[in-house]
Image (cartoon, rainbow, N blue to C red; front, top):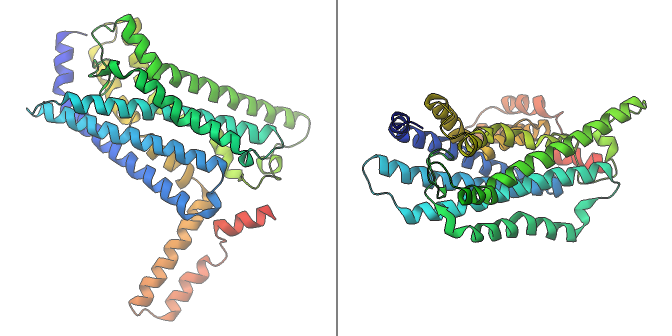
Amino acid sequence: MTEEGRLNIMGDTCALSALTLVSSSASVLGGICLLVTHYKIKALHYGLRNILCFLTISDILTSSGYIVGATNSMIESSGGKYSDVVCKAQSFLTTFSNLASFSWTSMIAVHLYLLVVTPMDWDKKKSLKVVYHIIGWLIPAYITVLMLNNLGRSDDKTTGPWCWIRTSSPPQTMQIVAMLISGKLWEILTYTLSFVLFVQLKMKTYTEKKNDRPYRWHEMVANLSSFRPEDARLCYIWLPLYLLRVWGTVRFFVAISYPGHLSDSHNLLLLYLQCVGDSSHALVNFIFFCVFDKEIRITYGKACMRWVCARKADAGESLEVQLTVSVRYQSIEPLSNLMQSKNT
């Protein structure tokens, strides 16, 4: 990167930090909404949705860490003192949470695959839950502790306005190995595993149709109490992760393979996209798996109508208005009733 390009990025540090703060804050809010939705709707308390909650917790931690890192960077760009202690603590948190996010994403893909291709209800396997938590929390924590001496302020070629692995320009071999072990390798493995399992499920779909046996998610798992047809959307769990993080991955591989080959304007564009993408995973998952879920929307719609009716009653509105609102939604069954009817 030219000196002029470096100065341009330094001049954009405040804007990049502000953008990261906004996207990270929105992601934390979206993640909390997803967790509240899961807590309030008892019919969602089963395997796949539980795993999605653990993924969301890790993504909330990531976004929270980026808020800390962006704030630290913004203080420096405003003339304040940059805190190396805060930098290292933030790097520890986000390294752990990113590794946990990759692990839980992979386990969603594996768990969905097991549910579809086998007749067993894997949610009842307590030993499997223990394995999931070891892979999802303990292994990421162990890797992060191993990388503790490598954590610190990053070169601006591989991250946004936050800390990760201490790097020089260009990155040295051991620094590249540390970055692979502490994130990028597991990210690529997550893409690969999730996509391979997705292709396997699609091939099964094709085989069923070719044999004149229409493929139906709800028929394949009709004997499972822990599955809804809407959960088929989880087979695309890799797609939001890929679309959000591909920008940082491109910058990483350019930095280690072709240092200096990426133009300053292109690098700055990718950096802006990375600042938004890397910190928005929880928000996108909330939109993808809650807002786009018809039954959850119906449940929230009925809750809103009950709240509106209660408000109107408190305000002394006429009974006729309340009945009109109630009749309009009386034919819509709540999610819990729909799940109960499915199970019976």
